[in-house]
Image (cartoon, rainbow, N blue to C red; front, side, top):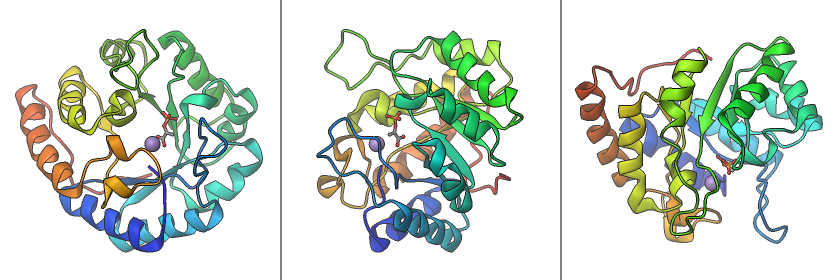
Length: 244
Ligand code: PEP
Ligand code: MN
């Protein structure tokens, strides 16, 4: 979830790379619900992410929370992430629309599929065509899980747009023990990629430990996912280089 130290991000980058991940995602600027929660390391966190990505040959994606910081984050990141709380932050959509980096746009927690597509359209309309949309769970009456994974959104988005559709089962469930099944459902439903939170010591994580997998759990899950992909005539591009 967050970059916490050089040792932490390097260890996790090596774990996920060995398991077949292609992109490293970590937060340096964290939009937290409480102002008293860990807010991320800021620019030093971006530097550590870049180092860990380069050391492992992974691409790197990280969140940008303000239009002012787009140039700074774009200096370090291969892909700019817009978080659920900012999906309709129009000045931010405008700013990343003018950036020369691909964008991972997360669905607002209370936004419709149509609103997600219109937010993506803002980025495209400013000249940046490299946008991925991400289903990360929506708010419902259910409280057992952190959010409700809208699995319907995956085939719906695949029908409505040519943009790649990513699923985030970690934030969608909020529970490590549900991430595996939700990931399999996402792949079976047609997701083009997954973002999964992994931590070397989930019990000590400064954010989102309850939904973070251990490296071993992640590696085992990737193997199972490959079989699910095959069952639906798809293929998991594990460990393959991706071009940003
Ligand atoms: C994240 O992916 O780092 C994150 C904060 O997720 P979301 O914006 O979906 O809550
Ligand atoms: Mn998180």
